[in-house]
Length: 141
Image (cartoon, rainbow, N blue to C red; front, side):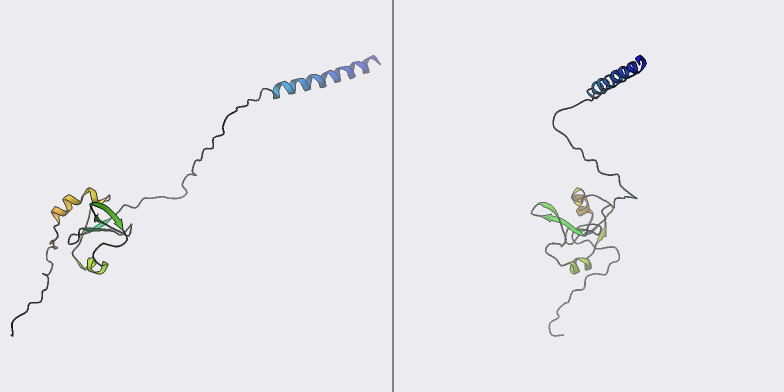
């Protein structure tokens, strides 16, 4: 019977020792107090992404630029460059029928307008363009 009593006492001691060990180790878990900060990281892009560069056509007779990628007209309005879906002071049909030049830059027209306006003045016409037809009135003949 002595051996059974020894096993029983060592079993109790093992349980007590195991419990103390678990409590000691679980007390080692770190705790940080303070405000929680959530950080959002956008997901990586899926598939192929690309950027479309602006392309501009300049209408010298009206000092207006058009970007077919943006579907916007850019021009000065009250000393400030604006970009709008319609040109100011002229219909789209009239504008499209007027002389135009495709531009080589792919950023804001404001950065290039001074040089462009000198190169293509308001009365500019492409080489080989037919002269404007004006009706002349002749007296009685």
